[in-house]
Image (cartoon, rainbow, N blue to C red; front, side, top):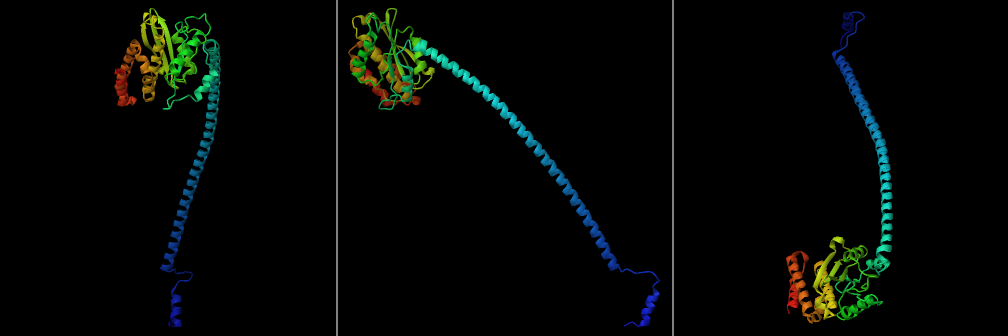
Length: 336
């Protein structure tokens, strides 16, 4: 141990009023000061970033809020605009509907009810469930136009009706042709124009497959003309054809020839309708072949029509899906 004298000497050696701080404590204090300064600086930076982030967040929130309000305003404006547009379109469509209803009413009063026998309601009811044959093909409605050749003695009541009834019983029913004759007596008064009457009939009955036969005298010739269309097809699918045409002198000595030509035309149209539109086998020709072969002129005219049908079928066989067996059967039938 140091002696008391030694301690006293050490104390006496330090000047009065002065303290000595060791380097260790000075380093510790400097480190603490630096650490505190650094911590305050870091905290200040964090605070600054936090404030900046908060400001950005507030700015984004404000912008989002403004955009939301603007979007809601734009949405309401668009809804209003669309609502007004829909109201205008609905009003316009309502006006168009009323005009069409009025036009339809006037058509029925002037061009249909006074000229044709089928009732509009009956036609519309038939459209809901048209009659079909065993192959599932909608049956053609057969109509015979009231022309001077059909009702050549108009002074006798019922001539047109009698002709149609006789045609139905002696040809359609006897040979079991699959056409529907429910409205065969379709005219109330004479057919003035085949084209005009066809267009009027098509306007109402375009939802029903129909064939109309027009026996017309054109100059010195008898013209058996047909108009037909398929089930629920538009006007572009309506076909008018001068199916047969012969000199009037060729029927003067054979009163039944006009009716035979008419049934031949109906059979030909029915088979075209089945083959080309429904890809179903021909049916009518085979049923009335015996009848038609009794009249060489009619049979020759009809076989020429079927030869043209066969050529047309073969040219589009890939798209029409008509089997070669059916074409061969037709060829054998008309050649035998």
